[in-house]
Image (spheres, rainbow, N blue to C red):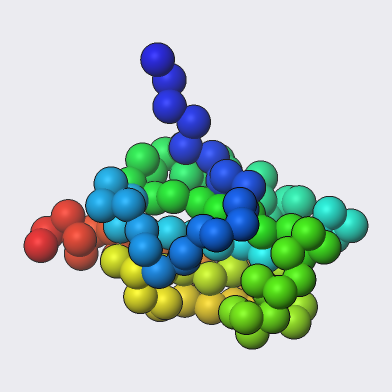
Length: 115
């Protein structure tokens, strides 16, 4: 049975800071269904997560969850939040290098493997 490691859609009640022990790293993308860069970023993150089975991804459409976005201080899309062991470590909004973010996450993965 193949496990789907692509980004999951956000469900009400999910706590970003309580991460399953099987997934020490969580990537949260806040996006909009009308945002083409959001769609492209989600596809790239999906492809990257498929190669990293210790990373979980969540996609939060701000149209459906405006209070969640506001509670996290998200006022523009796309926004990426990365949690390592439940702690926020990376936050980027608007124009950013996804490759740079994924490179930083890879360094966290490598560090966790050594620990």
